[in-house]
Image (cartoon, rainbow, N blue to C red; front, side, top):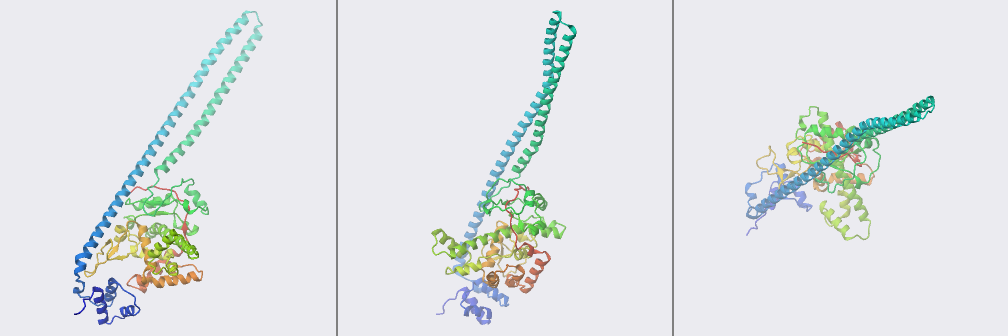
Length: 507
């Protein structure tokens, strides 16, 4: 009785029938290919796969229902996360509204006190007149009595005139001191008022922070204005004190984004000079980005949005890499350190606990390459996949949540993998280049540059990314052209700045 072949075995048998050398070489080297990979290779060689290959009772009866249930569960989980985020935003907005009302009440109270003080100052001259008249009459009566006592009239007159001159001078002096003293107080009040407004403005403008990375976003008080940061970019702030800004899902308009960049003085020219970028993390692209008339401004806006995400992921990878170096040199590791190593081995798909292989895979993707591929795959942030699914790099999926391409062939069932936020797309892209077999040449060349203590430059690695697109070498030429024309190599040494002004955006 002939053994019933699996769908994968049928694909391998079909490859041998049509003499597909690529699959034969994989079989000889004992490298296992998935059914999806076998399908792609066969289709690339223009071999038609019979429809009856896919008939599988077990798959149709059990696997597909389970996969569908899993997809529904994932969608339910995403809906719950969105609902929770909406609740957090409402709570944060209530907090800001309460602070704004309290500050407004304090400001009104301060204004009222100022008016009361001014009214009191207006009373002082009248009060001085009354006191002056009282003492004038009193001393006049006294001196009249003395005059009636037959005292020398001339001397008495001189004494009275001198006394009133002294009283008059004293009254003027006291009034002047009070008047100018209160005037300075009023000036101080006038100076302080705008400061109160600034504080209110800053508090109103604080953003809802916890979104995604921000795995844990700390909110130290912003004691320095943005202008000071621009003048002193060399100030060293510990990573723990970095003040990150996450822009939530607000369906932002491009005009709002450009105003934000202007408010915090975030320009690519400053980034190129200072080699520092502000940690402003957008969760989505503005939907009207393509309406920008100037192609230069459109590209710069796209780079300003994506660059902090790329740099942040690279810095996270470098931190993990340093930790891996320390653990590799230790003779004994704690349970927590062993757990961390197991997690990273799983994340980078390294088998048999090979720490050397993990070190090769755990490395950065040059910012120039990451930006160029993001621009190419997302149409500079204007593609349907980028706007609807935060898919910057056009990664395919056959099982996960995705968006079906409009021009997909009827015999294909792949989708473009979608993400909840932009940073998740950047993280998945870097994990893809660092783990997939198709990019082993990229990782090997990067490791050689590390061994020679050379900088990892994008233009030296683009040729190893032929497998990223079906166009092969033509694709890498386009990447080189994008990197060169837009001077993306300038952003390779860029780091995250220590702190940044917090801004709230309205949709």
